[in-house]
Image (tube, rainbow, N blue to C red):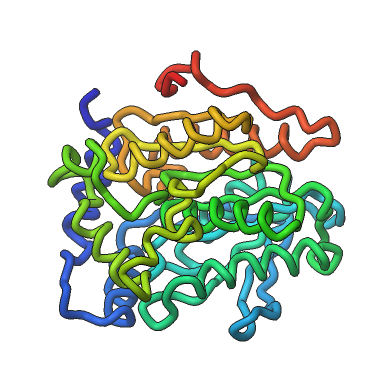
Length: 329
């Protein structure tokens, strides 16, 4: 399909404001440039939610800031732990505030956004260990954030999708905590970047393959770290026994094929998995709720998946192989 007209207008604005890849700048400088550009492009108005609280929780490398979004004044809603994207280098609690608020309202879940440590100052596996530690602490202390840990899911976009997939692997390998569902939005799943979508998604679609590789270079501490399944979950020896998954990809995204490949691996391993490619869309489209129809549709799809997966009946939707834009198994 051609690029969606709404998406094309947003990409044009981002290409104008966001900095070009500069191999000479530090992580700190890249974060400053991205935050400044994002303030000019991302939707300015965020949805109100019942409660928002900033707090700090303990982690293996020091305290971890989190932001808690509650859909009502009452306690006991399902718990969603969310990891923001940004190539493990940029973005923070503020960059994903709009996504968290929209998902909180649409799903009826308590959303806890995790401000894990960023590369290159904190390279692999520190961000992943931060995310696992935050998930484990929230599972054990869900009452402190007004949530029900017996109904817990993971959500992440881009590098956050990578971290959500990795935390699910860690939880399986380490005997907990119990995770009922994972939602991976255009996730990074493999270091190699050798898929057709990496080769075919060129200029004009915002994220470029060379930028993906730059972020990998900032994240990995050693050259062989990329082969570790906690960096590249697609390379895990087995993906059996993982939580049911929803994977959302975008047609014009270098990461499209590796995200869909991870979905196929889970489905082949017997993990209930729904994979939905949004045609005409670009990497990061979920961030444009309220101005991009596909972002609103994806938010609604994620929320519906969470409601079903975290209901007492655990009614996880079947793979979306017959839905418009779905990727055949």
